[in-house]
Amino acid sequence: MVNLMKQTVIPTDKHVLVCGSTGSGKSYLAEQYLKSYNFVVKLDTKDEVSERRKHGLSAWDGLVENKDFTVIRIFDDLDACDTDKIIYCPDYYDQDEELFNSFFDWIFRRENTIVWVDELMQIANSYKCPRALSRCYTQGRSKNVGIWACSQRPSGIPVISLANSDYYFIFNLYNNNDRKRLYDMTGMQDMLELPQGHNFWYYHMGDSDCTKAVLKK
Image 1: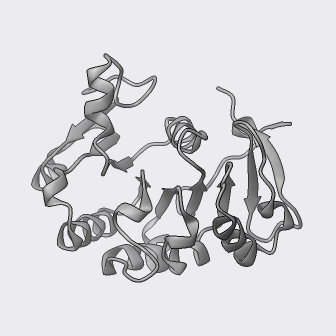
Image 2: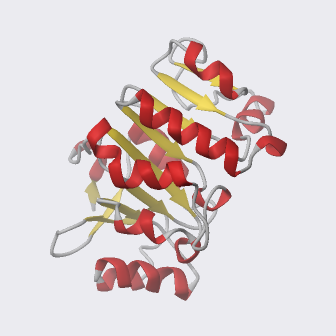
């Protein structure tokens, strides 16, 4: 089994797709991987910040709030943030296409930033995708902008996110349509099989096969 985190450094301008069922490990993988990168903005649409605070936990495992990262609730406060990492956690009732367009337009203009989207289907689906998010996917490399998108249901996310992702981390997906969508996009037969436990399939677009891997600190 490969300890991937020690072997694979992903360039900051590349797009990444992390898929898996609830509790499979996808959020943990993104959190641990991105801990070592500078200039990361997490889009927390599920208000995981409040859930962790309720249990006395850091909103970003292993990092210190207001030193390593800042939690921002109001969009207009993003520009004033001076930490390398930001968790942007908008109020549920403010989450609409206009807000997401403004956010991803801000990311594009900011440049040199990785965006971690905690659940892509909260902001886009196979029928509708914010225009500014599409721009980040298609033109982000010119601005050194990378999207790390997590999803429980890859069969329901925009094609643009699948087509423009260079790296795939695929945990257990129990829906056949989800696994088939990934197989159709990558051509990798392994995507049809469950990696089991907290293991995952790692695939870099263009490789001849997948690697079964595990994430360790």
